Image 1: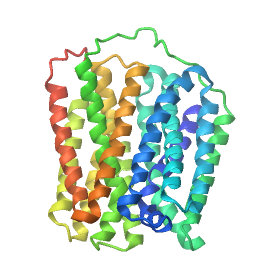
Image 2: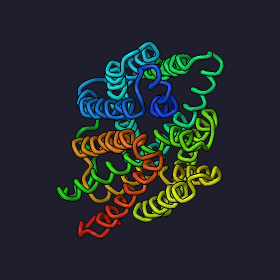
Image 3: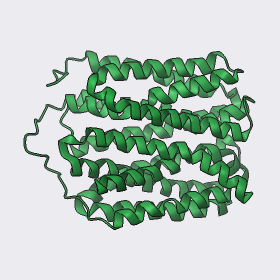
Length: 381
């Protein structure tokens, strides 16, 4: 259990960093002398770094002790976050955020892999807990950023505080032995045929889901201020509310996953996301609508990722290579749509944010139908 606690704390740290970009985006644009179209490059470089960290990180965990690798990723984030306030050029900042993304990808793969090695087939509730604590960090991040900026008088203090919060998790990991690798599976594993088309559909599902989550979480702050639905402080609280709803949703999903099939949970999640985003889009000048839509969207998005993993486990033999494909799709998803929104935000207006997210969610619903309706002949429904 001590190892799981260390992973949970590490994922709080991961959530803190993941949710930090949205509330700091306008200030970073000002510091680097660019606009929102230019600063949106950080979404792309961060996702590219995450993709690289995910792919290389898997190899590292197979060949080295896991805890030092995770601790190194946390220390790297500490150093990089501390440097960000002093970076005056966009391209240099984009490179620094690329390195942050690489450390995040390494840490993310490590937490998901090592907790499975610790708990084996009983990992279900622990995996949900891992994603819950990521949500805790993401919820706290905008609040930490706003409070640190108020006390220090400068956004630099926000990054310095976030940097120091990486240290406890790194020390806790280094204080414990790493779990043994289970690269060959466990006794009693049932190998299921891996249909290439089915793998592609799951990768696409992860791609579009992370596109929607990253776009909403990353742009809701700027969207709210641009639509004059609140000042910077209120927009930070709105961002925190999104991640908070996502966190609560993940907690609620733990007992629901025992009672309902993944296909049912995913359908309800996607419909909830569609209603939430549509609410924001249909009443663009309503403060009540943006708060209600944000809360519903965050709550509905909460269990999509872990539930999709559960559905994939029922349809496929989950190998390390297939898992890396899933993470690669997720990483690319976090890169494309947020960048596209950045290119169109000032040209066409803030509402392109919600139109883009709603379009992606409709594609997700179609993919859900293909995953459920295909003749995949799973062992368990």
